[in-house]
Length: 440
Ligand SMILES: NC(=O)c1ccc[n+]([C@@H]2O[C@H](COP(=O)([O-])OP(=O)(O)OC[C@H]3O[C@@H](n4cnc5c(N)ncnc54)[C@H](O)[C@@H]3O)[C@@H](O)[C@H]2O)c1
Image (cartoon, rainbow, N blue to C red; front, top):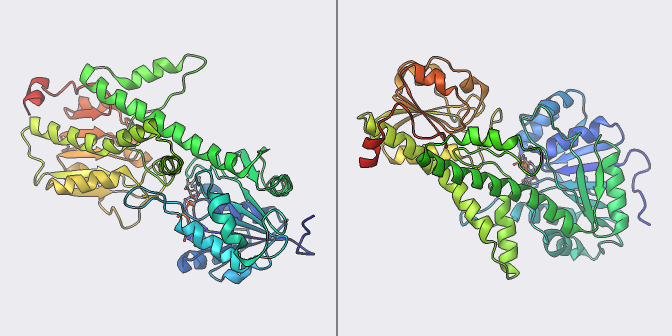
């Protein structure tokens, strides 16, 4: 039996205090059942947390940190006396779109240097099946302690949805799988002690790892499906939004997904590559996943073409045109720009010689233009993120064409002002001459 190390409150250390690790550390601290530490390599982030400020936009965590006690540090020796160690470091892709497991490996090495009998190590970062057993476990065992005997290794993938008003770290059910049944039980009871959610104990590390990847691949593939429909329906003159609304009233089997200017963020745009790579190394070629990634990756370019062609029909060359980009973050009401399609859109517009003004109230310093200036001075606008501030715009002033990359604007309102509205998959804009675009 693995024994508790601490006589008083058990110590928990969360490694990586970002969108996942910070709300989690807050939730554990708020239970008052544990002494909570946070280990991060980012000193500024550590200082901020120690001043009771949230390093991420998360309504619940911003509230929690006002009273939660988290001892944030960059010193790895806090791990020595931690009963539970939870790893929440990033799992990005590199420039070749291959998994970059270096943050996980570095975190595992830190744990290995401080590992003791009785430790419960939990990986929350999203990884492909096999990472816990084939990469993390050998590092942890390198000092001579044995997994499943001296310490436990468990995977409990995070499903948090930053910015969501409904779902937060407390109320999302979890799946959990460990090296041993005993480790899974201990870790599941630990999560039950601070979450109001069901904790589903699974049979192995690999099934828990695969479950998380499957959830995100499901989203990526379905979004690719509607993004392809959008491109087809633009040509066919059918409004894909209305079609999806219609299909959604089927009471079973159909689940709506919506097209847009691209898929971003640290999860959906990244995780499929982890499975693609691992399967490839084991002799399987995930064709569907690759096609889905390619379709979704093509959407920023498709969106830019809508603006360029539309401007051309209006007799305006993109080169030198003042263009407004509304939104840089990958989704509404967060400042996270990782893998954001807006960055691709901006890059392509600049390459085409446009004079680009970016506005995003959530991305401090990266997009300083004011929305009023854009509406006043830009001939074309691309909306890339459906922040409320943009959705609420009613008067488009001097803009001549709006490309609605999130299909969130009021088409009728825009057209009533004599402005061209061009959504993603909403059919060809009524106010543009189709014959001319075919010649362009
Ligand atoms: N952001 C999401 O919506 C979300 C949702 C579910 C799962 N995930 C997964 O959770 C994991 C973390 O994602 P995130 O969005 O919280 O990332 P993040 O970048 O917001 O936070 C990661 C933190 O880890 C720190 N860090 C990096 N390497 C470290 C190391 N070696 N030692 C200590 N600290 C280190 C960084 O400084 C940062 O503070 C990823 O695997 C991601 O796929 C993310």
